[in-house]
Amino acid sequence: MPRGLVAVVALAGLLAGCAHTSPASGHKDVLGFVKHSGAVEWPAADDYIPDGDGLRILVPEGSCTRGIGTYRNGYRDVTANWTGPDTCDSLKLNPSPANGARTTGDGPPDAVGGWRGGGVAAEAVVVGEDGSLLTAGDTGLARYRKGNREELARTDLSTTGLEGQGSRSLVRGMAVTGSGRILVNADLSTEAKPAPVLLASDDHGKSLRRMPLPAFEGGAGRQTISVIATAGDEVVAMGVSRRQAVVWRSGNGGDTWTVSAVGELPDNTMITRLVRSGGRWVALGGYRTTKDYTYVLSSVNGHVWQPGPADGLGVGRVQDVTVDSTGDLVMVGLSYGSRPGGEINNCGVVWVGDGERAWQRGDLGCGDAAPQAVTTLADGRVLLAGNRDLWLRAGVQ
Image 1 (cartoon, rainbow, N blue to C red):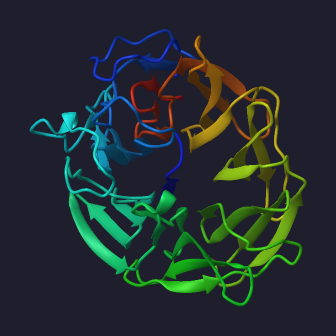
Image 2: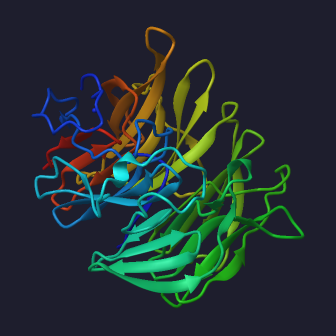
């Protein structure tokens, strides 16, 4: 069955301070993860990358992975990919900036200067059984197979960028049902009601149609979907309204839907990940009081939800999650601390659990580039990566 991976998120000792050091030998492990300092090629022409930018998605490819994200070329963000050797203990930009493009200066947004980038462009990715990548982005759908890009449904899924500069993608997630229906969450709503609308394709991505979902009567204002996932033809989508998690569920691939709510969530909770493993659905999010925390919801049937285990979580907001070869969830996250002088430290965290028992937690050190993405490789190894460093865990039998 295809496995979907969404753009967001997804670690012992201090994070490396230099952007271009060679990979160091493995450090002491944390929950089995061995750190490789400086092993990820830095995705910027200067020394600054905002949190969440750069390497944002990891998908298994061959015996290693493909990282998907952006490169700051001194003028604007451009598409960037990373690949690695069979050992998967380093990730290099592929294609790589050439002819001194890395040293481009600071220029105005949307200028044409700087490296143009390259590789797979995506805000959401689903990996096919044949290893192909179905992608969704601000211009619609595409499929990448053996280095070739096939254009699929074309539609504008973008909006004006922050502060009116450029544009940004509306795509927030994508999933494929067992019968092959493609469902894209592009932050759309009905005109007459504040209900969310998905985009659906029943012809392998060649066209997209609007699929309105039922409104939740107890909600307030415009209702949106944060996450979507499938298990066969069961589809679950979730958003947040009035401190409640609103859940849309379909048991027939999206032909019909039910809607319900789970409350009450902590103030300012954002749901960012949704997975199914071990016979249960697990939704993950974060909220902030004086510090950042992770919030867990779980359900056996997608209808009735309850808070998941909090024991072992501690401080830290989940960024990304993968299901390992044993069915356990491996989550990567970050928390914020302060350096001497008042600068902000990003501190990496990894958790392992199943959404039912207490979590195992490992602290991965602090620096200026925390891990943002995680994936399970074809041979069962689990890889965590940020914009400087990566952590690798051997496969679990």
